[in-house]
Length: 368
Image (cartoon, rainbow, N blue to C red; front, side, top):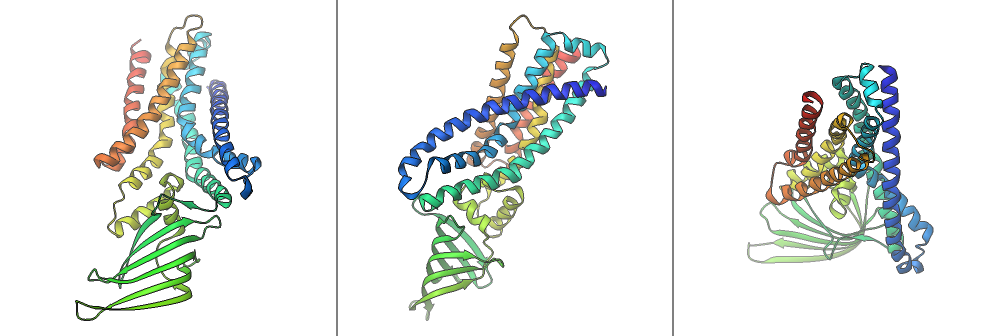
């Protein structure tokens, strides 16, 4: 049995590696062609072809994370179908590889790909994606979102703060800061504008070039306005750099722990966290899709192929993988719009394909 597993694992891993290499090469080509336009636009700022190439290389971990379940499905289908076509799988069956042992062996291999996918999505992809954005921002000057930047909310003992961050600088500092402070009655207590800010190790913000306006409510109908300019101002708060990055960039660029902490921050400040909760549960369930894919591929080993028929089944595997990717994205948008349970929204595509794969396994393998 050890020899059978070694043979099967070697074939599947080689096929998956070939599929991953093909897809990544395709994405690399498209990304690089797209970046050539940016090279022409920011050539005067020093954005060269070499830096564009590095930027595209840093996007590869994110593509790899998205492609892993699809590559596992296509590679495993190809191996199962090829073994069936050449009658090698028939020999393996006569050597003691019954359907349940084959399923167990593939699930063990699938667990390895689950761990790999989780590691890529939780560590390599967020770090590389953030580095790519900061690299490009070094030559395009900043990272910003639309006309208003990012809005965050912070509750403290003395009131509530609404914070607007316009841009994220390449060195990780914040630019175009506006802080609106409201007292416990809901009245505007102060407005602070700063050119830039740096987040210190203890979490406080060191504001630079500060223009501060304070409103002192006197009799409930009038207010005394005091203005002051300061070179710097320290503002203690609980808004971390990861939270600002999540608001300015995309939630998928955060790892699971940072995403969970950001959700807790939003809920503590009475803000909607639906989008981020869906992304959190997607990060939990998405790697498990690799298990679903190996189960979906196993029935192909029990089909009878004519000459050249393997191409049709591999093409079907490609379509199934693409449909899973599309369904996963569609359910994410629908769950956010319809306010579905986040964990169910993230798990539903995997559950649908699990039912399909187990049904195919029961019909093609056990009944036939």
